[in-house]
Every structure is written in C-alpha cells, then in structure tokens.
Image: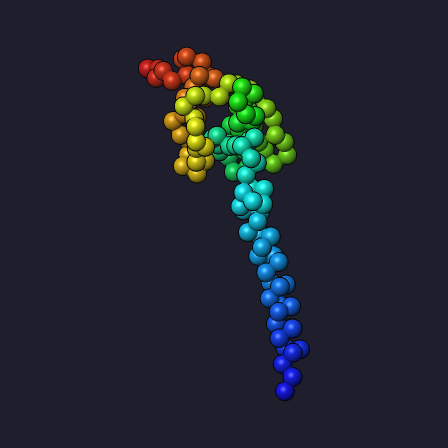
Amino acid sequence: MNTMPWTSLLWFAAIIVLIPMALWLLKRTPLGGAASGGMMRSVAALPLSTSQRILTVEVGQGDQRRWLVLGVTPHSITTLHTMEPAEDAAAPMSPVGGVTGSFAQVLGRLRGPAAGVDRAP
C-alpha cells in the first residue's frame, strides 16, 4: 500500500491551516508590529458614544515626547490639543475600565479651574 500521497496531502493541508494561524498570531504580538518600538502608545481613551471617542496618545521619545488629545469618529481623526506628557503616567492606562484618575485630571485642567467645582442651584 502506498501511503506517500496521503502523507503529502496531510502535510499540505497542515501548512495551509498554519499559514493563517501564524499571520493571526504575528498580528497580535510585538514581533509582528503590534508594538511600535516605543515611538507611540495609547495613554487613555474616553468613549463618548458608540462611534466617537477621545484618545490621548503619546508620540516621540525623550525630550521630543508629546501627548496628543484626539477626537476619533468613523470618518475622521482630529487633533484637539497637544501637551507635554505628565510625569506620573509611566504605564499605559486601560481604556476598558472607563475614565481613569489621571485622564480625568488632564481633562479637568483643560476645561479650566471651575470645571470640577460643584455649584449649588
């Protein structure tokens, strides 16, 4: 009995299945470009609606670092503000958990000193 054609066919099928799996895995790892080598990272995200959000992104390295506050919609990305990075934001914040303390503080500073004051009716 000749098993050579079946063995070759099984190896061919295995390779065809492994190609998309390897591409999917590479897409989600730093080796495949998921990390940009420290040149850009997401600092915070604030969802405004299902299709709109405000993102804070850090770009550059060293003295050239800047934070960009971006308005993101399905059709455009608009730079709302550019600022110096905060010293206490060493690690990226999770956008899933809602508004985090540092991002809320940054937005409070952008809105002005009276933004966080409760006003009596």
